[in-house]
Image (cartoon, rainbow, N blue to C red; front, side, top):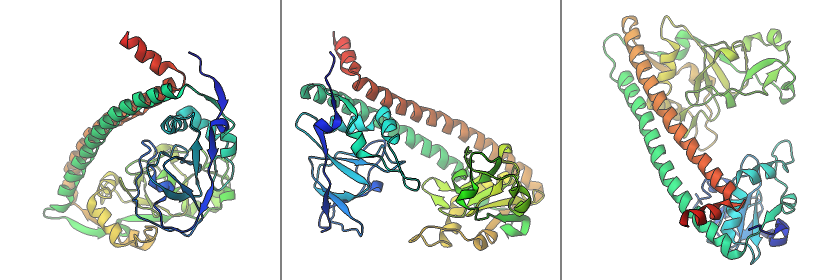
Amino acid sequence: MVWPTVKLGEICQIAKESFRAGNLPYVGMEDIEGHTGKFLGDRSPKSVASSTFKFSDKHVLYGRLRPYLNKVLVPDFEGHCSSEIFPLKPSDKLDRKFLYYWLSSEKIVSAIDATCTGARMPRGNVKEVLTFDFSLPPLSEQKRIVAILDQAFADIDKARALTEKNLKKARELFESYLRQVFSQRGEGWEVRPLESFSTIVNGFAFKSGDFSSNNHVKSIKITNVGVYEFVEESDNYLPEEFLESHHRYKAYEGDVVVALTRTIISSGLKVAVIPSTYDGALVNQRVAAVQVDESVIPKEMLQAYLSTKMAIDYVRSNVNELMQPNLSIKDLKQFPIPVPPLEKTVSVMEEISELRESTKKLVSIYMSKLNLLDDLKKSLLQKAFSGDLTKDCDEAAA
């Protein structure tokens, strides 16, 4: 059956009712989980300094700020939301949950992304979104599709939760071993400040205008430094002449890089090793490159220690977590590092490397499963709005 096509604005309106009282629950962008649409905040009344919009349990909340265009919430309560979230009010011809799934689909998220304007904080153009074509099945069919997706997504989320639990266990096993190695130190171990066996390169505050995709010199920014992994990018290039004028900020393959801003995130400490593709790159501000004297400790062992809870505890004790958690270059230089005696270094590294490889294999398997589950969700949504989802169900039941 071919569904009639209408413009979204014919069956849905923007409800921008300003609200300043603060005696209702508040929803900010951070309160919506992107891949599930769950509300992560609390329902106690809350006032905020910025302007907000009032919403009810008749609305769908749509986050219009890139990169959060997949943040959509179907609230079951009355409240007020950030001005970066638009309350959309469906007509009686459109099921709220059907609209939620439509807004969450990959095709629509990409289309909304294409409407974004603004250099510093790109925002989706909701008025333009309301001009999008919308295939509108009968309300009974919408509810049927929603019921199928609800059940399928609930099953997928259970599988995802189990996979994430196994992924966490694999990482905790590696962490537990490292904690044992570095805490139960034997004879000959000593604790030394990081600067005593390394050269630490503090990044330079390059101007935003210095970067261009037309340049050729790579830079290392905070976004390149992940938790135990280096994230390669394609647009952080600086002018060729900077290699000479800023040679003091050059880093090399094998150097350990540390993010000095938001050093700790939920998955751990942001520390990585520079790959060969970034050999000779220039270090940007709020990143430090540690050039290790490997006659004292291998760089892989240093990176391993910096991934432990002991290292995280040191960072926590030296940052103000009420504000943005920044690690100073002074505290990085004084970072206490357990160093084994030279004769034990090889055996310790062999054990760390072996367990690290086993952990990487497990993590790779679980990450592949998570990606497959995400792809399954995308496929189901694509089928839902092409009419194939209920067609497949009818054929299976026949």
